[in-house]
Length: 306
Image 1 (cartoon, helix red, strand yellow):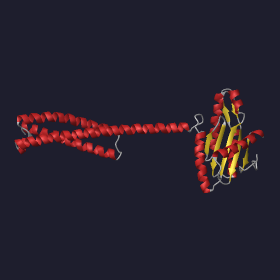
Image 2 (cartoon, rainbow, N blue to C red):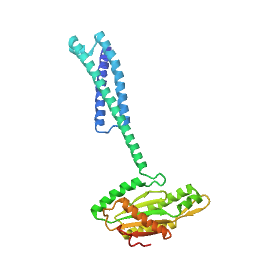
Image 3 (cartoon, helix red, strand yellow):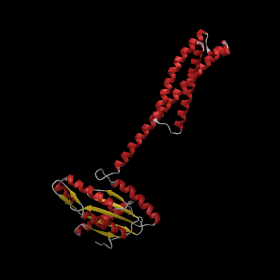
Image 4 (cartoon, rainbow, N blue to C red):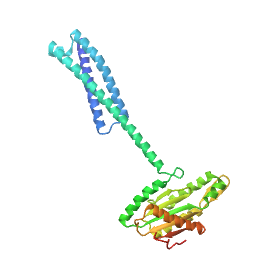
């Protein structure tokens, strides 16, 4: 091959480079439409496009030189007049394709960045929602969490005519624990009691800390017998629980007020909590470290047992 032939072949390679980069960009955009593009692939596409722009810049100068020297590939096959027209059309088309590809890639990069930012905001928002509904010390739900979850559970239980039980739990003499051993030790007791409750309750039960040392648990579908069994299991585990501190070991007990209804009637979560709270204070007055249960909320509390 002559030197001129090599130059013409190089001219053709420049054009093929532009076409290949355009096809590659099209594949990348197709992947983007289906949501299957990664950050690495997007960066690789931008690198290929930048390299293609460099090649086309050199190719533009090369084609200009071939045109001036009369060795243009289009002149050779189509004559001077049509060769010039086709050469100019090819040059404009390749640059147009490259510019369109650049605009699409940049738009895709911007969309990808927006999606990442949106995903980050969604994650932060979810974390804020969790923090707003979570007790920071024990990691279980707080009053707001319990209110929302319990109302939803009660609504489902009413439609199915299923029983429901609610336990109000309070640690006995907790103020003395804080005064004698310090608030850090008191926090350890709260965490230990929370872990104990989680182990004793069922998977679908809703547990929350609603006060300093006060906890509440809703037992969807639990009968009176099941509520008694859970209460006794909690008390038994509490009596055997020991929390070590720097100089001693802390033992503690709890008082539990229980409301067990054969059907989830039109009572609100607040009404169930208030009734269980009253029963729990009866346990406190009776000597603590026990539970009492009622099966209705009408008038005086009935069938209290210890």
